[in-house]
Amino acid sequence: MSYQGGSMNFGFDVNHYFCRKQIDVNRQIYRLAIPNIFTNLTVPLLGMVDMYLMGHQDSIHFMGGVSLGSVIFNFVYWGFAFLRMGMSGVAAQTFGRDDKEEMALVLERGMLIAIAGSLLLLALQVPLANFSFWLLEGSQEVKEIARGYYFVRIWAAPAAIALMVLYGWFLGMQNAIYPMLIAVTVNLVNVIASYIFVNRFHMQAEGVALGSVVGQYSGLLLAILLFYKKYRALSSGFTLKLMPLLRNLKHFLNVSGDIFIRMLSIIAVFTFFTSRSAGIGDVVLAVNSALLQYLFLFAYFLDGFAYAGEALVGKFFGARDKIRLQRTVVLLFRWGIGFAILFSLLYAVMGKMLLGVFTDQAEVIEAGTRYLFWVVLIPLVSFGSFIWDGVFIGITASRAMRNSVFLSALLFFFVPFYLLFPYLENHAIWVAMVLFMLSRSVMLTILYPKAIRKRFG
Image (cartoon, rainbow, N blue to C red; front, side, top):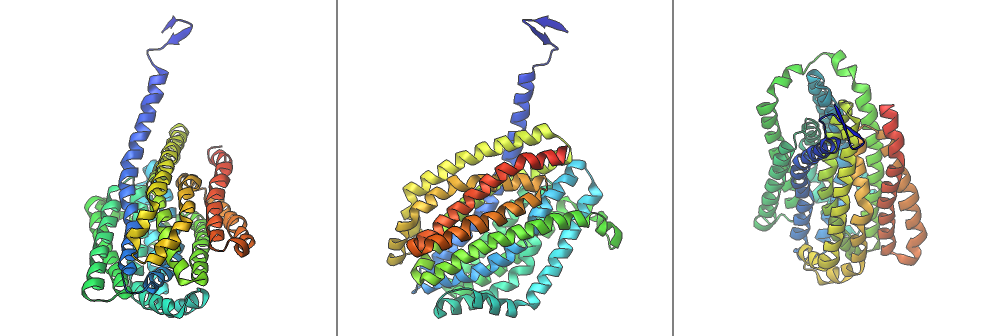
């Protein structure tokens, strides 16, 4: 030990140490985020392909019909999204503790819930359809197309819900490659099958729905094969005994229950958005359906970083490594701000051109240009909500997530919409959406310090 220039030299450069740690965390973010970005982008791209196939039919009713039918599956799948989100945080914490038995049991619990939920969904498909189409607004022509789409696509639900569990579990295991391979397979098969069914067999909306069915079961088969390729040793931890399965089930159900309520609030917002668009008119429904793809494109892109946050924050939380956890949060927000600016510039410059990709209906393109301003704002006001979601899932602070989304939906979406709609009509829907996304970001920023103190003491 020596003393030089007013500081002690222990042969250890503190700044160099922390710089290396930051680089190490950034490298882990890249390793998880990049595959997740490719994984997530396949989802809105698939929606864009559906819009393209329906937007080039001989009527605007097909765009609206598929959009309206998709709302029901947004409700169903987002309702079950608690399985993926709850799974990733809990699994990542078991990975951080290196608890191999619990890794297997976490997956088994999730799959049992997925199987039970899928069977219930198939059994109730007719009353669910009747209630949904009674609740949703839209012309008779649009609803008829949506109904045909629904009764084909419903059979993809068991595979889709099981894949949510497997996606979350793989991510918790710090494995973003397998979800990417599965998602690319699902959506590539989906796109090819949909194109064939629509353009070769002239099945129109039913062809797009059948493409989804084929794609989801292809992905599930691949997921099972990949699990046994890499994680076969963990399968010995699966059990038929009740006590091990119930041991930590309460924590998983508490987290999942909060996320389920959170997802219902988001579903209510997006279902209302589409249904109210349909109530204004078929052209507005087609326009808003197309413009929502801009939001989804950014959301799914940035969710690549949010998913990386789930895995890394969960791992560092499980290992009780607060320093690297906090450093991960800072780095994730730097990436989020950068890409928010990039996407807003992209939409400002190329927004109208993208509308022309989705449809060749001149009246839809002309009407859509009046609302492009709102999608330019969306990345700037929403990036915080996506990044915070990943962080809060990683530390399993599910109650704060639930409360922030519920209050944002109630106070900053529905209230502004009803106040402004008599004066702004369709613009009111977009104002409400911007406020909803912004308020989620602000609330989670306020709640984070308390959430992290509660968990680390």
